[in-house]
Image 1 (tube, rainbow, N blue to C red):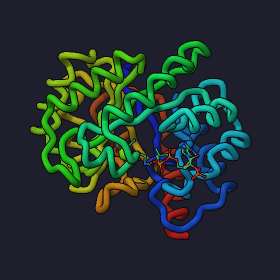
Image 2: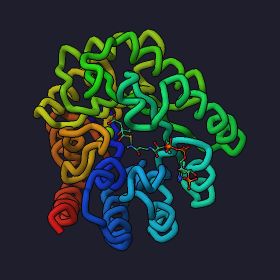
Image 3: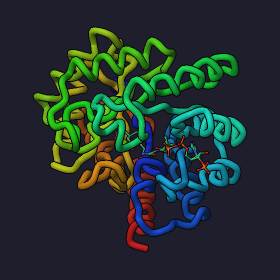
Length: 284
Ligand code: HMG
Ligand code: MG
């Protein structure tokens, strides 16, 4: 059996958050249920952010209340502050993610706060989550390039990753939000973060705007990263990073990893079917 690599499915959140037309909650639930059947251990089903900022995610509590939960899957959601955290816990989320940026320009555009202010918002979340044994993942955005500040220094990524890890995030997902990263810039970034966060606690989150996502996965694999975020059907982007497209498509990522001899525990046939369903949501 090959070495294990995990795909963390983020399509229902990172994918759908960017869709301009409303998508019915029943469709979101159908998407998550089909993803559960594909065998994911972790699925990010939505976010508890301001509905004024991201209207598409406004019904995440209804999604969590209605999906058919399987015991092998953890259902996760993003939270930006204590307001979102409270609603997420009430909605019986299995894990949460906090999200910070390595660049000040994107931090302001995405959460209306400096990096330091966003970290201050996370501290009470991490403190409370520890008391109730709720796992917290941490995202760092703009790990190579920022739409506002340009090229991002790997040292800035390492500092933010270090703070999130020290605060208690069990895994740090390194986000190439714009999809402008290259194997060279991604390698330099991972090597810088590795001084603070063990590679076994990192995840690669590669958007595929320039078609480099699988190349970036390969260079992260070579450096020891074994968790990658994917969005089924290649859905998505970020509403506050104009021009950025979806994450690497989960079905392509899975096929790629299997070709390289890794074991993902996912069913490729189910993935291909769910990808068609997901693409249909976009076209609807
Ligand atoms: P703000 O406007 O500065 O917030 O937004 P505020 O604290 O001044 O509050 C304003 C109003 O929002 C108040 O209501 C609050 O109660 C309400 P009012 O008094 O006006 O009626 N409010 C909330 N309502 C619901 N849920 C909440 C919440 N918080 C405040 N959690 C805020 C600040 C952080 C809320 C806002 O900027 C926000 O929601 N941003 C989220 C943006 C977002 O979701 N971006 C996409 C996800 S990140 C991403 O995609 C990158 C990633 O994929 C990795 C990568 O690719 O790099 C993770
Ligand atoms: Mg993203």
